[in-house]
Length: 84
Image (cartoon, rainbow, N blue to C red; front, side, top):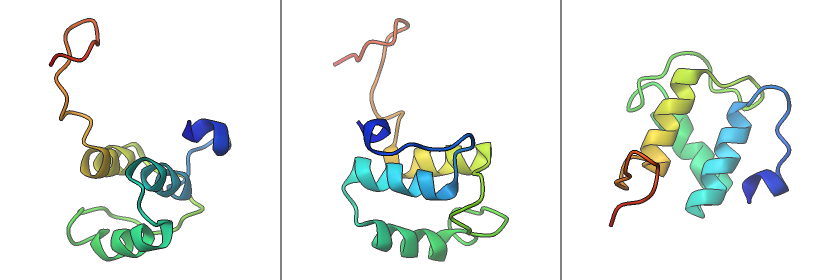
């Protein structure tokens, strides 16, 4: 549903990630941005600048998705179906 509202460009930016996480977790985007800026190099151990307009790296994408969306919390079978 996020992709119906947002139209990311050729490269996924840090701003796009922030918007996706905010939409999925129902967190205020400004609050999330402030929290990410504070945790960027200390808690998340990410290098580089926190610029919402630059393309996100694969490492940054993986770290942020794992922290905020927790994709491995659900068990799935080999076919990709959720196991209760």
